[in-house]
Image (cartoon, rainbow, N blue to C red):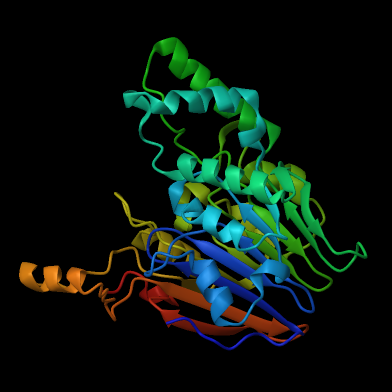
Amino acid sequence: MMPTDPPSGDVLEICILSRGYGESIIIKLPERGWFIIDSHLDDSGSPAALSYLNSVGCNTEEDVQAILLTHWHDDHVAGAAKLIAACPNAVIALSGFLQRDEFAQFLESRGAPEAGSFGTGIDELEAVLEVIAKTKQPRKWCWAEKNIAVGRDGGTFRFEALSPSERDFEEFITAIAQMAVKGTRLSPPPRNDSSVASVFELPSELLLFGADLENGPKGSGWIAVHNAVWQARGKATFFKVAHHGSKGADYEPVWVEMLIESVMCALTPWNRGRKLPKQRDVDRILGRTKMAYAAAKPKAAKKPKRLNAVERSLREANIKLTSEDSAQGLVRMRKVAGGDWKVELFGAACHLSDVLAA
């Protein structure tokens, strides 16, 4: 069940939501509006961010300033069209990859049988673009060092994209060109090069959101963020750990030079195929900070087994039962300027040390 207590005006709030597959992040700035990064569906089939905002009394039609969809994978965009429709005043930010002609040509191949591994994410993005066209909401294409939102007076906050870099795009185009030449299957690249990592710069805080960005060759991915983009920003006090805590998204200079010691951090798990995080991922992260949390566990909640006759009777009566052992989890972090983080765990959320516990 979602909490119902809204933050007071002077509180900075970060919520990380997941069901074990999918993630959504909500940020409330002190004396400012709300921001959303990515979308997934909760147990009721509604966008989880929308469910939370409604539960705490947020006027989504007026108070959501920006929504960032970091990339097209379905665990990051499920329900995004409905979410955006409920937030008609929000700026909609999307990966700059989606704007490029080469990428559009690549996506045309997804209808072929050999290119069917994209899931439902692209279909959802098409629905998103239809909603934006109808509501006429401003749209921003994100590349490294692109502002998504800035305080009206120019100094109170800055929400900025840290990726993808031009090198990320070049690597992606090279990869699909090689697939075309070799006649091999057109499938998503093995890394999330298009993913938009981002930062909130506040007067006394830096908040780093890793999305699904991974390490890439020749100075792309996190290497590019660290070497070319982060520069003299300082050290972040919060980190949404990238790509479910996987080793491929871990770059030591990020922890050493971009984050404070004992940084507050959280991740969302991956509940498909080779589940993430692994025990070695948990150990690696906890070796850097003990202030680490997971919004859910990398396993699916078991649905209750009922007799066919019972299931039929429930359907005929239009009754839908939700298991108390919900997979939905929420890590909520709040603080006032100069204070310490207060962490609350709801549903399936847990400390990272417990994420792999049965």
